[in-house]
Amino acid sequence: MSTSPATPSAAAEPAVKAVQVHKAFGDLHVLKGVDLTVAPGTVTVILGPSGSGKSTFLRLINQLETLTGGVIEVQGERIGVKRVEGKNGTSYLQTLTDKEIARQRSHLGMVFQRFNLFPHMTALENVMEAPVHVLKMDKREARALAVKELERVGLGERLDYYPAQLSGGQQQRVAIARALAMKPDIMLFDEPTSALDPELVGEVLGVMRSLADDGMTMIVVTHEIGFAKEVADQVVFMDGGVVVEQGGPEIIDHPKEARFQDFLQHVL
Amino acid sequence: MPHHEPMDGEGLPIPNRINAKPVRKTGQIVAAVIVALLAAMLIKGLITNPRLEWNVVWKYLFNENVLAGVGYTLLLTVISMVVAIILAVILAIMRKSLNPVLRGVSWAYIWFFRGTPVYTQLVFWGLFSVLIPKLSLGIPFTSVEFWSINSSEVITAFNAAWLGLALNEAAYLSEIVRAGLEAVDPGQTEAAQALGMKRSQIMRRVILPQAMRIIIPPTGNETIGMLKTTSLVLAVPFTLDLQFATNAIASRIYKPIPLLLVAGLWYLFITSILMVLQSRLEKHFGKGFEARRVRTKGDVPPSTTDSKIEKQDTVNKDNQATMLGLNA
Image: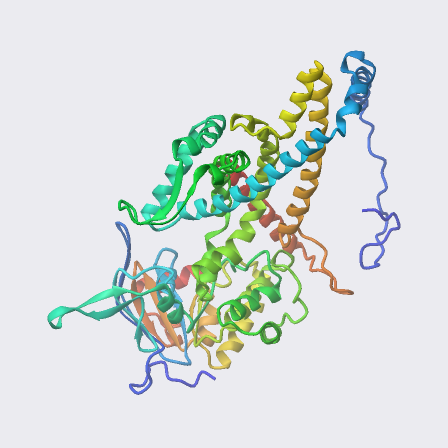
């Protein structure tokens, strides 16, 4: 249902809005002023060579890293810090409490390159974990929800399997179900197929495609150009910590910037 | 493996199944014979040597003082290990805390209690009520006092014994726990954070259960070590444990060797039980890590070539993690 325009209308509040985002790890300046707006209900695919800062950008949105400079807003709320009124009408920035960070994260679901399933829990237990212990949902209710989410990703037959007994593609689908069980507004995918054998990539992309069809707001860092062309409303090419080129999926076929052209030649 | 019919697990035939006899290894047989001979000589010596006085051993093996000693030794081992494990987990988590004061306290604790002999520490706890005669609760550096008690009532010989053992053991165990915590993939914490779990929940539900796999084998070692370290409580002095009880009998009847055997047999017996408990625990916390059969009936577990490779991968990683844990 990718009917939403790639350029967000002024009326709808952006799902994610990044303004001049900087991130430095000590002396290493990874992101050097990234601007990006993601409209609700759209799919944004971020492409770029490794080391371009695209994963770091995704992790900043979910506060797995802290912002060094700039502003990121999720559904209109600034993340990571808040402005506090001081004396004499002055104000200053203050970091958030763990509770506030958890609340901000509750809008976001994240899928990792290495799945990061809890190995000591079955597929079902993995998906039930957060609804039971974060949302304090009743166990029976959480179980029903988890079964539903696992069926949605095509794993209704694998409820009692441990991650080690599942293939990579199945593990990643459990990870997607685990994130979806928290009813996020926005899903972040950090190279979800990069750790998979080629023949297992398709099943994960298929699940992501159906999510996009359901109108989920998604930001996907990936090397799957085909997926980007087919599913993305917005394509962003990052290199050297900045956005080099962005636009609709058509820019993949008609890249303007030399660096993007060069990248596509190596990937395709 | 066990079936010889030429079928695979799904009932499909395997043509020309190889049923070759394993090649005979002469070296192994020779070695086995030599070892068996030596073992037989050892056993014969143990049984027939009159100086071991087995009749005395049997007479005192179930002596009531000896049995009480076994009880106290077990009690000391269990109490001090339980207290030490709780303390060790707290120390290890403090050591990884963001708060530098907590980190410092944890470091200093480990430095002190690992750096001084347990015997010295036990002597100190035995002298506690002499050094600090009164324990009280009040406002520090003032004369305000809500509640107080004589140290000698709290720090009895028995309490001093387990306290001394536990405080010392906690320092060693906390390093084992820390290694276990550090062996868990940081991606686990990130995934749990992304799901909105609190720090305490992440520790309790995600990190510790996985760390336990690495923590349990060396902790089993420490428990068995503790069982024997309890013989040092005569430093307190606490005089009801197995070692002291057998020693007392030995010096009364001038027969040290048979009573050492009595003590040794009991220590061996308890150690054997502890080893069984340890392997049970290892199984429990190993779930999900060993590729074990799934309960679901009629459901063939995934066994494609690539998933096997992945399994192999995780096993390798586990091994690496264990090695890391042991090195740390």
